[in-house]
Every structure is written in C-alpha cells, then in structure tokens.
Length: 156
Image 1 (cartoon, rainbow, N blue to C red):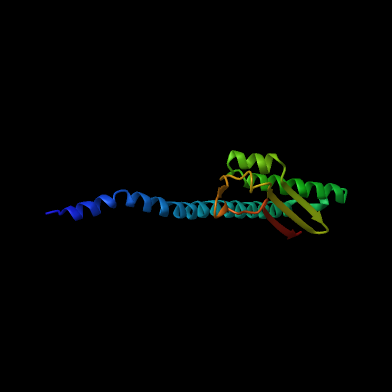
Image 2 (tube, rainbow, N blue to C red; image 1 turned 180 degrees about the horizontal axis):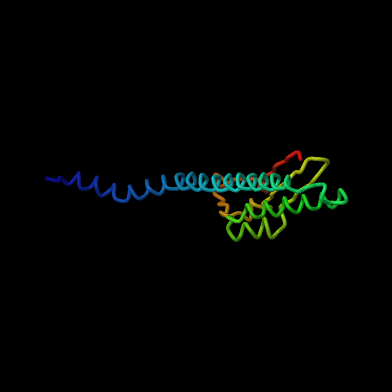
C-alpha cells in the first residue's frame, strides 16, 4: 500500500530519466560523431595514398626509348600516373570527385628517375563529406587538417 510520503517522492522524480538522458546523450553523440568523421577522413587519406601508389606503379610501364626527348617522356609518365590515380578513385562520392578529380588535384612529377604522385582533397576542413559541428564547450568536431593528402614516390 502506498503511503502519502511515497507518492510525493515519486511525484518529485517525474522527468528525471528524461533529464538524465539529455545530459548523457550529448557526450555520447559527440563521441560517436567524432569516430565516424575521423574514420571517414582516414578512409579518404588511405584511398588517396592507394591511388597515388597505383599512379606511380602505372608510370613504370611507360617505355623511355619510345620517346625522342626527355620532356615528351616526362609528360607521358605524368599523364599516365594522373590517369591511373584518377581511375583508382572512381569509388569517391560525387562531391569528393568534383573536389579531387574534376578540380585537378592529382599531380605527378618526374624528377630524375623518381616519379612522385600526390592526391589532395583541398579545403576538407570546411567542405568535407561530413559537416563540422561547433559545440560550445568542445569546439569543432571533428578537428581535421585543411587538406587531406595522399602521396607516393617510386624510382623508375
């Protein structure tokens, strides 16, 4: 049998679970959002590095004896590396594809006998795949570098 005192105590506890949920939900959501955002950025950087490696590997197939000048050979090596790296990034979503491939952010340079391929996602911190949240106490979530870069070098 409920006494009057028990009824009053229960009445004072009304809504406590909702308040506790609200207080706990915010940090858990921020942690989950940070994990997803950082994972996505790391996936992109790993994909960019993989594409740069593919471009560098493809440049080995260019035969230097088929070109009359070193400049023609270097141009062909660069175009083959850039094309192969772009093909390796076909899995990117449309927004990222516009930033990286259509924005010509894949660069290949031949210096001596070393080809270096760099893939860059410019301005990722403000124009990323996942928007940045700005929270009062915590600040920006996720805190990422301005540009995401993947690079590879190979001696030919």
